[in-house]
Image 1 (cartoon, rainbow, N blue to C red):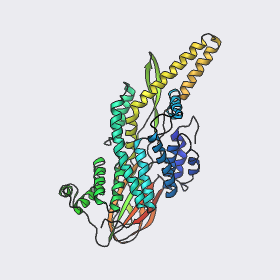
Image 2: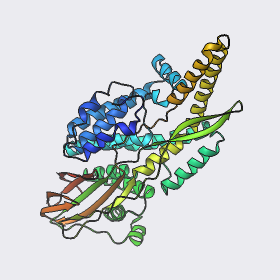
Image 3: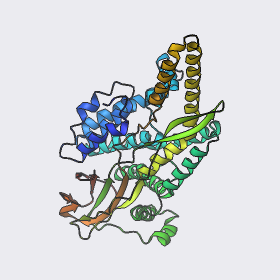
Image 4: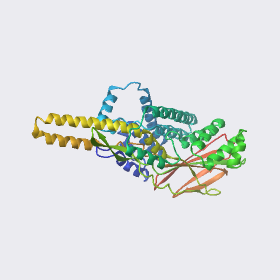
Length: 441
């Protein structure tokens, strides 16, 4: 989509603009041309999300299936192939952008969560259940992988990087992990509950509440299920979160999933250090300020406005993923600068016999080193900045609901769940809904 001199965030600007406009599916043709390239995984994720925002759940399902297959290929590569060896050798001299994209763990989890929602919106509940279970498994595997990597990767002593890690920690706030996602666990719990698997739902709701405490809808889910299942935690939850709110005989329930804005993009950071007494610099990715949270929105048109509450901050997950990877990134970058330094010395040595060419060769190497030193700014940029949820039991009937500048008619049926998925891309809010014959009553 872009050239050597255009960063990935710059390439994706037009895609995000299209998602905020009247033709959200227009970038798909361009994204599809990149699926066979080295960054095919990343473009498959972006294309899957674009199709999803535009309401083409079948196309989104196909793109995510491609991304899932690519992740599986990475898993199956027990030995390094010659092609990958070449790519990684190239990265040592050029930059990390040469390495085929392999997303952080939280992106992989989100692929399965979004694939589950694709299935759900197409009334394939068993397919949705398979995907959310896989999302849960991956969160556990990513936690084990990270704990193992902490033992094998040690940060290099570098004041700039240490300072940047501390700054990122402060920016991430109370979110301390990239691979534990309360939004994913909540979606898993919701699907379990809709299929009548209430014990499994309770487990996942509780995990979500531990990761992201304070969400009132999640807390009410715990109280309600603990009471219904006669769990020993009921009295504790009732004291902490209030009495369980239960539906009337003719009530249905509305579940709102609201996704806001776009996740933060990476930006370059220059890091100085010395090799053989000479100062060198590398360019690493980092994150700037995530800015203010999106302005609150209320769903109107019900018996009273429904104010959704945040359940996940994608900016914080992305920041933590980078923070966890920075020590290894610096080690790789330092090795590359050393290789470039040795290459420059070799050119100078070869040029000493031909002094008329020395200045030109030296200048050429300096230009090469500057141009090839580019931070890897790739990441899944059509993800939302923030995810929120809302939930309420309502009398049966037809409702005309409004969220921001968007409206939709929904139907609440006795004993059923109306799932309302709202995607806010800044200047546009799109609604998708489905009625599910749930087993919560």
